[in-house]
Image 1 (cartoon, rainbow, N blue to C red):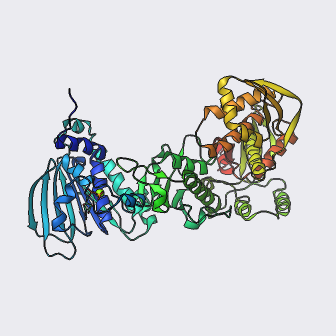
Image 2 (image 1 turned 90 degrees about the vertical axis):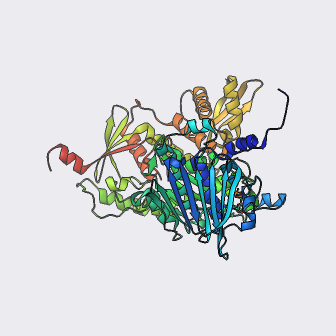
Length: 587
Ligand code: ADP
Ligand code: MG
């Protein structure tokens, strides 16, 4: 076939296909228009998952009669005028494409009336062609009705999912708009039944309650605006502002769908930001579980490009690293400082055991130099972790008395509120990990010179892994020098790495780092340290002397997050007094 220009209706349908994937895309575009029009009340109504009907009514500024038909032309917009405007977009829409796209694949009726005008205008568009326009009575605002979506695109129609599924996606869109605009009142009616309603009272927290329920919302911690870069003391004027809510570590889900980001109030998907959140929760959540978080990021419109994706669901930050670390820091800071102190309504049952009190005072006097943050954590120390306390995240361990070793794998210990089984490997990993992270941040990693340097011959994959993490390895206490080709000289190792076969240990570490390969360098530090600690920690099956066990338990007591190993597995299982009494029929 020769090359030729496509007829406009074909071109229109192709373009529409990019913007309008499914009914929820239509809802998103129409609601965004209502928000851009300054509406404070937006009502959405759908039938058959939006396929039969989508109707969005708003009380926004309306469209003047003379401009109405133009609104349906492709690239017609009131939101920008020059190319330079594209660099500082403050509205949700800007391409002038949505109405044209929706109208190309459905039957659209619009009734609109600008605020000061007496009567409104009614316009009907079918398959992209204007079919009818007339003056028509209307309240101020705009009412858009979209019927028979994809009636002229049979393939798209075939790919639509069950109406319930499409309704779910629409619910998601409306709910996220409500999160972004708590001062706007949203409602969603499906088949005449109200399935969502926000109050528009301006409170983000109230919207969270509406979406997730009170029980979940109560477990969300507020990330306040001034919490981001604190600690480093180097807050730059132009760095992004982060606020919102993040769930306590005990509130976790199987999928990442409960982490949402809004950039200048636009709901976006961003894999790197998801990493930032997960990194903030690093080692606090069990493996394979993900937190809940609603994260608002605000920055200068000139510092983010919103014009990079057909449905505007992705954005590009001018400084991606700044965005990443602002989010990561704000959440981490919130988690560490605001994890709620558990209410001690009923004190858990204790039993009389040797010297709790004496040890308690000993510890207290040896710890007068705690930082504020440590002090906050310290409040958990005297408390034990009955069921209630388990839900509050980084809980410290009580003082424990070691009784013995079980299967050369677990340490049995006694605490004020029962029996504890400690996984010696996981616990040691946690201890080493916190020690190393601290010395790394204070740049005081100690390393051990080898008597004779070791020559390492690495396979190409490991050479790559070594090259990638060379600087980090050195910071962590390794001294490795190139020795020609794939050979390296190992001169020193971190002093915690007291294993007999150093060569094998380094290969293991490189393999661990490579396996979890991830392009985000900021994360690799913690990963590398976790890998080193995994290799350096005592193994299951290693028998420990009473002194070694005692020391390990004492160190675990000092940890900030003693409950999990750096990979998220539990270090401690607790068997409360009550449970033991029940087991033996004493209650
Ligand atoms: P964009 O939002 O990118 O400008 P659209 O095709 O979505 O493009 O809308 C075209 C224009 O129609 C908008 O620029 C706006 O002027 C007008 N418009 C659309 N919907 C509304 C509405 N609900 N209220 C007021 N004006 C609207
Ligand atoms: Mg628009």
